[in-house]
Image (cartoon, rainbow, N blue to C red; front, side, top):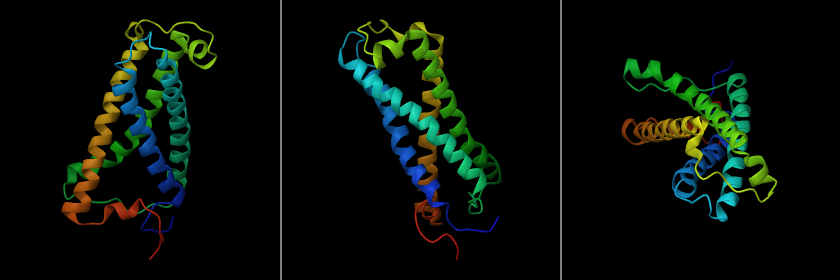
Amino acid sequence: MKLVSRYHPLLVALHWLLAFLITATLVGGFLVIGPMASTDPEKKRVLMFHMSFGMAIAGLMLVRLFIRLVSAKPAEAATGHAALDRVVPYAHYAFYLLVVLMAGSGLATAILAGLNRSVFQDTGEPLPASFAAYPTFAAHVVFALALAALVLTHVIAALYHQFFKHDRLLRRIWFGRRTA
């Protein structure tokens, strides 16, 4: 593959769209859905958005992974620490793994809890009193916490590169001419 200074424009667009969707879905899950009572009639509507975003995120991440694998990409950005430089590629692929695990555990929870009927088909069936009864939900929460930690680490690392190393790292994941 040829050497480029920026990621493919579709990869860039998907990166920022997914950044928004993942952040919104994590915040919605922790701060909106989590505290809501299952008897709150608004919870079904919020769950419909949460579940729809989750499915969209999973699909878009798979598209993004394919584009990442087949398109030319810039050289790896060095952190200045050999151990960190070895870990960084795994951390990036961990995003894909965690999103797949989130989607899978969310889908499994939805199936076990009958959310396809109560949320999407609006059959009038009540939501479960608590999703904590489902082991898949416990996994969903653990994966969400891991994904939130990875997102936070990713943002801190990008800001470190941009403002402390001054290596213009964010330029690589923005639109513009890809070759010198």
